[in-house]
Image (cartoon, rainbow, N blue to C red; front, side, top):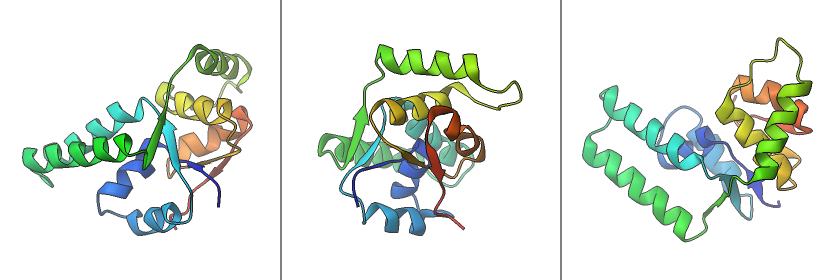
Length: 146
């Protein structure tokens, strides 16, 4: 398999054992590289801190998760793609042409535009809103989690 684009939810499941982690890790073992948008850094930190807030992790666990994520990025296990002007242009164009009832959050739009702008035809996520919006960006949304 070629490189794959994972949203932040899937990137997080690579590090934390939770529902769907096994399926995402199995998928990751079949791709040559995992790509995601640069704002995944913020989303990853937020998801890790949510585990602390909900009592499932300590601040030490949080720091360990962030350290592992940074190692994965520095060793290009995870490739973070920069958010450049053509991506923002694509986001604006999508909002301009999207159906009025489309539920599209800014962070999801950045993932979708980043994937499309970098030549991906598929995006992997378990976020139903992101998956529903994928066609607006010319992408096929795929969720490997049953």
